[in-house]
Image (cartoon, rainbow, N blue to C red; front, side, top):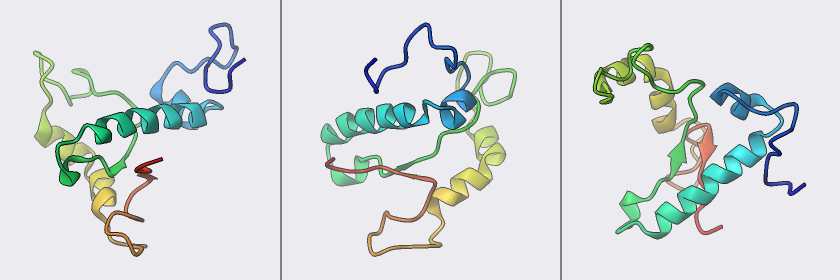
Length: 113
């Protein structure tokens, strides 16, 4: 089996976001995110439009959990309140390294990999 693919018949098939984050396939999940970010960053019109950091939340946004309205529009104020800690971590200067973008949040995007 290709190490970067999950077999359909695999017994530990990830189902939820938490399965992807904590499960045995987390490296494949993160590599998939990194590959897509590389594509998006290569098409960015200017450096400030590039994705530098990201945080994977343990659940998807939904109407039931309050992040989406009935027309599936994002309720920014709800997301801001509910995930305030995660958002603050992305901008926290603790552990700041030489680079302006390094050491601020849980996942760092590798640019030019």
